[in-house]
Length: 510
Image (cartoon, rainbow, N blue to C red; front, side):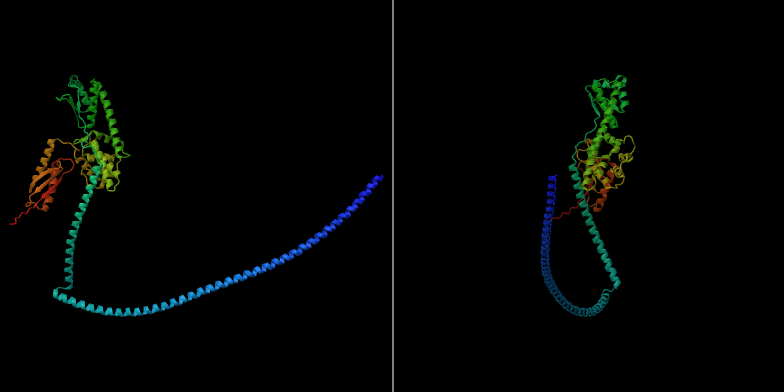
């Protein structure tokens, strides 16, 4: 109990003592805080005063600096304005001087105009007097003199213009000839073909003469079957170890040749076997025709050609003209026309296409009546070729008028291909007869002294009598000879007629 009381009294005494101690300490801290706050406030006031004074000093310095800069800028602008004012004053003085000069010049111009007017009046009076004197001396009026002068000038102009036109025509013709020769020579140089084209063979060689009897067969049944199937004539004559196939259709002749060669190789010649070999040969030839046409089209570089036209081109492989293979001739004309078109700056594809198809009518001319040029143009038109291609095909032999440059190129290419050396073969007898006919035709004209066929009959030079034929008649004679040759002779390509007239004057100095 006592112990509890003591503890309670001790706790109370400790609590009271702690309370007073904390209060003392709190009062002491408050006093210190108030002192510190008072000191901080006084320090802040001093610092703010210092900052205020520094800001005022800086503002004064800035204002002073700005004022100095403004004064300097004002002085500079004032100096510039003074300079401009001096320049304006100087220019004004110059303008005033120029105005004075202008006034002086105007006065001079006015005086000169007055002087010129007086001179003009004097000249007019002098011209009138001169005109009167000229009319009196010439004894004609002014109008008559004008008409006389105009007529003289017109006559001089006519003669000079005629002479100029003649000279220009000669120059242009000479330049055109040079250009044409250059283009043609380039085309010929770039188009190298075989000198002699391949021809279709119509003679079949036999292993022995006994084979002729087997071909004829018992009572001629084999040869009759063969001729009825193939549509050709099989000629068996005294030629040793050979038979001849005759037909106007080259494709039929080729089928018959292959059939006969197969029969000879097989050895079994009888009607049934002939029919079998004929069908095989026909299939081979048809395939060869198709391949030949496609190869020609590919070689020239033509696209979108109708299949029937391709087949017709292939048929030309078995067609010849004067010994020249028509398909090779068509390829050559296509190349030549394309080269010449390129040299002239034209699109070569049109000319190459027309050149390849120009003789397409020869593939069917034995089936249709008419010229191969007209037949070919009709066939090409029916199978969708353009008008320009059909026109070139139709005009390449001059049967219709030339309308486009492509027509001329195809004509030139056709003539070059047909007329080049070795392109077409001709027997010696026919060749000599043709030259003799050519010379005889030229000699038949009046005034012709003698004539000479040259360049394998592609040119004839006619020497005329100078006292019977003048220069004008020479040109007419050349045209007449050309017409007679066209009407009476058959010839490949073209023939050049050169009329030569020579006048010789001989004198002796003694």
